[in-house]
Image (cartoon, rainbow, N blue to C red; front, side):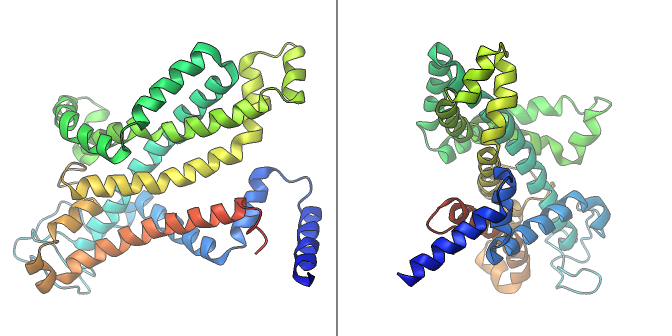
Length: 327
């Protein structure tokens, strides 16, 4: 009884302190108070900073080979050693982080931040045949497991996309980027984007259905506000924190998909570094016995990223759950 009274008093005090704050700020404050969430956020921020600054941080080119110094052990010159072609492993880990950063950002922004919420808002607000069409497409995509769709697309249309993209190498602006490894990154992005929007669309549609007949929306409609203005000014701000949650969850899923596809040989193509490819290249028992650092170093950074996203998701779930919010 005393514990329940103390918890109720704590909740009341918290409501007084946070009165007037937006849902997004409330979510951020509650999340930052959790130590495990802070650790996860700091590692994710570190990982993404390394990926963004890869050209400045990498001591060598990720493509530079030295066949006289293959599979070298960690040293001052090569802190993470060298791989089977004498390429600096530290530089390749840094550029593998860039690969993951680029794919997760563009895929999540496209699917979970733009396409998914936009379709969910339109479907939930307009209803009728528009809602039916969007829902049917979403159901068709989600009726098959995402991983199976991704693998099938990567195995079937992936090679065709790679051949098509190769025709753009001579273009003045796009060509240099494609030659730097963005060609295979673009192919993986296209494959992952097919499924990345469905979850966000369904969630935003359900929330839009729940608020489209509220008093403030009806008042805006009666005042002559256009559909676009109602969606942008009255509905979207009230569900934006859910979009943030969806984006946060999508980052981990996309990162896992990218690493998994590359591990299966269906994702990013060599010589562009990817954690999945680096793990695959050194996964043989002989290599694990003689050169364990070539496997465990990229595996550590990849697993740490996926674990951080998972822990962050658990913390978000605790924050949104009224039973665990104040624990």
